[in-house]
Length: 475
Image (cartoon, rainbow, N blue to C red; front, side, top):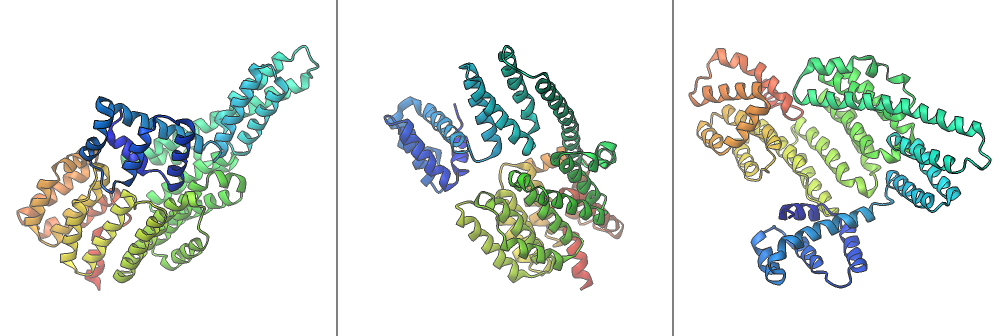
């Protein structure tokens, strides 16, 4: 049986268009018993999900099969989403043409089937969906076999086999590159710099210009820009980011299909400019981008990237009023597309807000914001880790050891996660807390403090609290 929260989270993820489509879909395909549609409408209207209220309204009608009703609703929504998305991207179209070709092939309508498979092949090549190509070639060869008694030219067969061989080589290369990218991100999550650099310095990645396809080049440039940023060679990182952005913009047909990745690279470039203090250049790119908003399906991602950078600039420039204005604009922007601010985004902007309050010596606001945040955290321990570290550092800097003790008692579970996933950082945090609680922050310990905090920054957001402590001290 489906968990109630699975159904609720799926419904909450739907756009207004998807909800409308689901209702129409239900009316077309299920004209009789549509109690699951009533459950859908009821959950959609609930501001705060409450299982007991839901059961009291539906268990009496559906008796012991309430769990089955939730499962039916979940499956019907997914079925509708598959239909809704059927022709929204090239990949779905390719699958559609292949399936149509297979039907025609089974019926012996080989010329019609051949047209469908060739159309699917052309689009797979054009939009670099190489992993679909071998399957299409197998169908094209089957059609040739069925047509052997007709006038088939040997040159056509040789061309077919040569093309297949060419794409097998590309697919093998892509497999190696995808595995390299996968392992690079894995080592990055473990802070294994040596392993990351070994991947980035391999000929497979360094010789990125030799690859014939967009996807191959894109994977290499992504790893290279990440790696140089990690090495703090920001000039090289910006250079590879720029090359990556240009690669997208020079491949307009591919750009349409990979626009999500393009947005990420564009805003990564902006974030890095902010990181190296090229604020004015970053602001100019943000303003230009704001004038050319992407299509509606990208608005949620766009708002996240746009406002995270804008609020970061406000924080870096210590503009508290501008920060609050942009914060409210962000909430309104999400409301305009009937979406809630994503949890990770909410976490990030609250982090900025606490740092900004701290920098303005608004210590009461710091404590207030931390308390608001920790009362709204999610079950995602990894998401809470950065803020827990920030809160601990804030309490220590404010010498509020009483609140620190209470805070640590409340977050035992999250601290266990921190210990498991980030043992070195946990060791330092634990030592820092023990010294702070016993008020042993002597000069020898504080000399090591700044070095250790910079290490912790790897699992936090783009800058650490200590940067602002130093900046405020200089001012």
